[in-house]
Structure formats: C-alpha cells, structure tokens
Length: 158
Image (tube, rainbow, N blue to C red; front, side, top):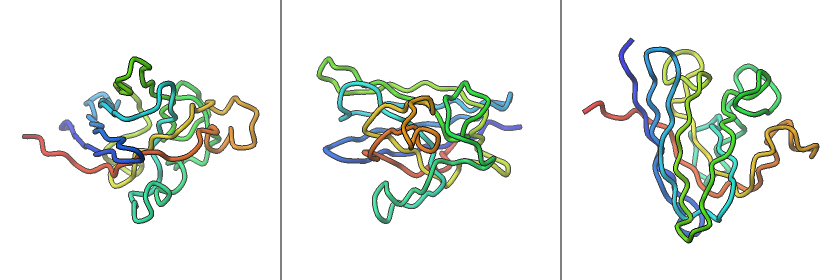
C-alpha cells in the first residue's frame, strides 16, 4: 500500500489558525501532526467530526465520526468513537500554541471508514474522555464549543 497524505487547514474564533497533517502508514496507523495557534491555555478536545461541511462554521461538521456506533471515550479505550482523539494542549507561556503528534488506527485515509472529506474540530474545553459523569460525557466528552475546524483533504505527495 502506498503512503497516503491529507491535510486540514484550521480556522476559527479570535485568530485561531493552524494546519494538521495526516499520514497513513503502511502498518495501518495514521499519524496526525500539526500546529494550532491562538488557543486559550490548557487542554482542548480534538476530534474528527462526521461531515466536511463548514457552511455554518464549525457547527455544520456534525457529530463525532462514529461509524461503529460506540460511546465516546479516550483514544486508548476499546469503547470509543473512531474520531475521538483526546486532547491537545496549548501552553500558557503566551504562545497559545498546541503542537500535535498522535498516532491512531481508527482514522484511515482509505477504505470504508476513511476520514477524507470529514472535518477535524478543536473544542473550547477539555474532553473528559467519556468519564466525567456529565450528560454529554458519553456523546461528546463535554468538550464545549467548537472554536476551530478544517476539512480533511488529500495532500499532494510532491
């Protein structure tokens, strides 16, 4: 299998911006890397959402990508949405930047559960990973508003 690459340009509230690259490895894992600036300091939920639709901003991206109809969880949990990628962290040093480096086997760039054409979304609050006891914990991780997003598209291999 050849290596597939994709990218999402992230835009959002209050100057939030960045890019996220996806590289599907021959072993089946997809490596997610990137940099997002303009975030408030701390943890932010980071998910793949089902729709690549930003006609109404990030609110149009639909629910978390969940082809197997599971409850929300942590990336390391057996029970989780495919799009549950946990949290990213923005420093409090004034940079307000999150550096991303994640490897995951449930977000392929090819096949029936491909994430191409879907959206990556950054949330205002931390994802409680389905363990917070809030009524939204098992569906969204209670991660709050969608502050930034971008559509995942194929990237040139040049």
